[in-house]
Length: 171
Image (cartoon, rainbow, N blue to C red):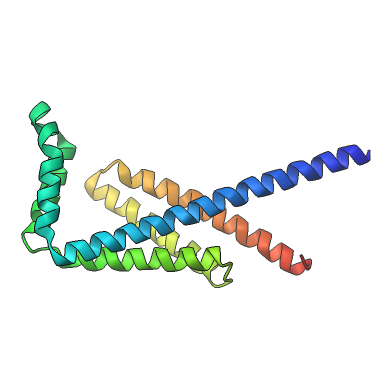
């Protein structure tokens, strides 16, 4: 019987370590995503014409192959809107959204107790907003991003439960 108990405990520990690895990877992903949003927001704040130029260059070849490409048309339209000076909201949104993600990622990785509930509420709000935006834009990326956020929410929730259990039992 002891071998069975040891085997079960080893499987539990292996599963716990694997889920902790996924938790760390998900939090690092969100932190990196937030950092990129900050960089994009700052860049957009300084010179949106550069962004427009880059998007036009990157999409030129695809447009030659398929002049009716909806993704390319959408990217170019967004770049034109940003290049026209109507980018203040996008700049502020990207920087604020990115800062929230970076602060939460740091808090979660440093195991700050406040970060777990704040991350769950914040990610939940992001999911609701992404699904709301999907009803208007029908962008296939939005449900995908929402699904990733839901998976990370589950990992955050699970990790918070494990940590609470460890605190109660003095580990």
